[in-house]
Amino acid sequence: MSSNGNHTTMPLAPPSSEGLADPNPRSETARTVAIDDEVVKLKASLAREKAAKRKMYTYLVKIADELKTLRNESEQLISAAEFARKAWYEGGMWRGPNVLPSAGGIRSNIGRNENSGSGEEATNSIPSRGNKVASNMPAGTSLVPRAPVSLSDLFLDLVTVTAFSRVGNAIQDRGTVDAPILAYFAIFWQIWSKEASYSTRFDTTDISSHLETLLACFALLGGSLSAYSDFNSAGCDRIMGVAMFVALLHVALHARVWYWFQVGGEVDSVNYAVKRYAVFITVMNTLEAITWAVGMSLKLDSAMRPWVVLVGIILNLRLPQGFMPNDFHAACSKRGVLFILLLGFNLQSIVAVASPYFNYWDPTTDQYAFLFLACFLMFMIKLLYVDDTYAIAPQDHALLYNRAAGFFFHLGNFSLLLFTTVLGSGLNLLTHSFLAAAAALPSDAKNLVCGGFSAVVFSIAFIKSMHIRRVPTEPKHERMFFVAYVTQFVAILAVVFITARMCFTTDMDDGFLALLMRNEIEMLAFLVFFAVVLVALSWLDEAVELRLYGDGAVASEYRVEPFGFWACFKHEEPLQLEAMALQRNRASMLAQQSPLLGSSVMSFSNSMYNSFANLSEV
Picture: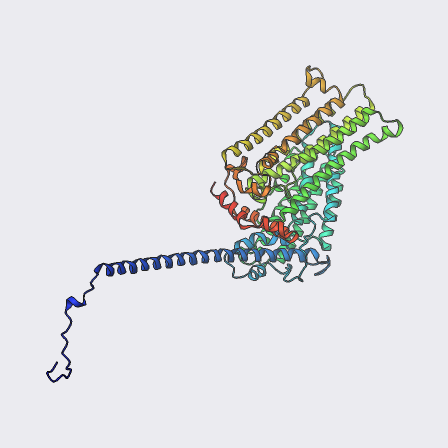
């Protein structure tokens, strides 16, 4: 400031470094720590977001794969529905062979689900020269599959059961099952198996297929008229001629299939599988026809005739699902229908034997009781029989688990049909002797009834043992199921052993079993009691399941450990993949019929992929 009072500005001194310093250094450190914590939180948030997006992408990929699978299988179901709804003459009355949608698209679709770009590519690989696959259907069309057993198939079943009954008449006359009876029954059964094998793979609604079925029925009826013959007779020549004629029919039938599918295609395509199947069946039937021709050329007293018959039967044996899958549910239905028809024919023959007595004399209470017990025994055997169409999950079925198990499964079904025929023959003789009040009861009738019942029970148990059972992984529940299975096993062995002893009991033996064999109605009542006990015990595992879980859907989540005679063998992956497709197709059909039920069946948490993953770990 100057002396004259004017204000003058004094120059400011530059700030020192001490003046710029924060008077509180701790606040700066706190801010740095807060910034570092914020960065760490942001990095963790970004990592979590990346992980969530990665997981979401994985789920989207899985959902996309599931949608591709469902799309392919839905197209297959739509194709099957359109095939079921079309007129039989569509495509021409003498059209070429068409592969059934349920037989042609199962294994091929599974192989392409992961690699195909769209469902259209999977569908386009199915058609061939004579094979037409549906593409579009109007909205709202219900998926109604064609009946697994057509009227033509039912007529063939009636003819086959008639042939079995002729063999049963021969058993009644001889009182035993000898080698010619066994061979002729096997030939008749293999003729039916050939027709069933073709009709579960190819469309049989055209005139050419109807004509072939008619010729096979004529041949089967003609051969059944010679069921009384032995190997060294002209009747055996006629039966070998029938077998040769049916073999030549299938040579022509499958050569026609080969002609329509000779273009083939990729190795995994349906056309390629059909071509290989047609070539194999044509070659085997040609060899079989040559074998029967050689047998017919031999002299009647030749010792080689039985061996030729054996070779012809062996050439007709097939490993299941060898080259080409079939319509699984249709094949199961055909087996069940044939067995039920055989039981019906046995019951009808019993009534036919009793009718003359009731026409001339008033029936007594004992006679009514005898017929009631015979009918009751047949009904109990029907309950013991396992209808494997829907009662057994496809992935647990012997035919779709292991080929060796499938082969013995077919042998078990042959044994069941044979001994059911033996049981029917014995009941016919037993009915005649009881109503006629014969002084001396023929021992053949007793032996045939008891032996036939014992073998039928054993055959049914053998067929059940071919399938895979599921037991819980929880130890307490597992013990309960094992107790149920052991109880069933012991009861079946006891019944088979006791009835087999009754079969071999003679009139000179003493004891309780010999006492039962001296009276027809008491013996029959004893067998009915055994059958009722076995039926009740056969439901024991289902009762345990209902007691523990109360719902089949809940039980399937726990019963994931395979158990059974064939569980020790490695499962075959192609067969299991086919079983998975069948299970998903069944779920799709349920979804069409009942959306609520279908959604519960098709839930991803209870999908077949989880079951297959658990199975592969065993």
